[in-house]
Length: 292
Image 1: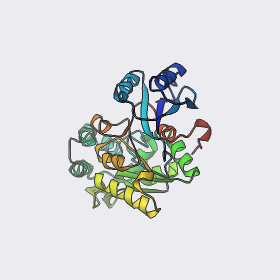
Image 2: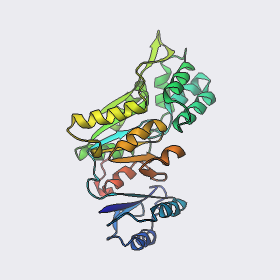
Image 3: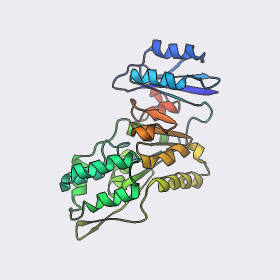
Image 4: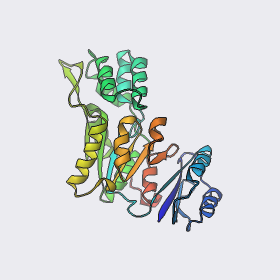
């Protein structure tokens, strides 16, 4: 048995009864269940439809997301989330680079690395090197003035934790940011890289070992094993090439507003919904949401 999820952006709320019902009828699915009127609905069916990709493309044209998963075990016990451009709306290193006067150069490297065009470790080392001499006090200023939480993140973390879930923020960014974001959103733990500083100035170096794609996979495996669980019990979300390993390993792996090369390889693609889409994918309705 499989469950089909249809999800709209909460801002657009443009999922209609007609569209949802038409797809359910087209695939001879079960009764339609509304998780949030005009935003999220789901139905069950016996087998994966042969024209799923065509239907997905059609709904994308209507700014609607479509996903299909095994019905059993949809509700996950662990949330593993990327930070930059996932739980927050920015890339922290790009914001630091803006203050340092090297914004466009660093942003270009970031975009190419997140799309899988560059080696993550080398790209991170190069970008951090361009920050050498920047006062480390700038980090607090950037957090306060340039970093915004992504829509739906607080509800995602709070709802999963209220239902016994464990939430981990696993970032290729920096602990100076993940510590604050994890605290604000209520994550149980956070893992990231360390920006090195001396005498109040960034050295242009990052602590080793660098947390990249492989380390995110290891984090997923370690966190699950520590709780007597498996990767199948994890829902993972990210947007960059360094997130692909954990996205593909998790029971539910979600590419959220991801780079094209990442979305193409992800089991679930959310291009229009916000982070609450991860709750709808697990069968939570709007009435189940907990505010962070």
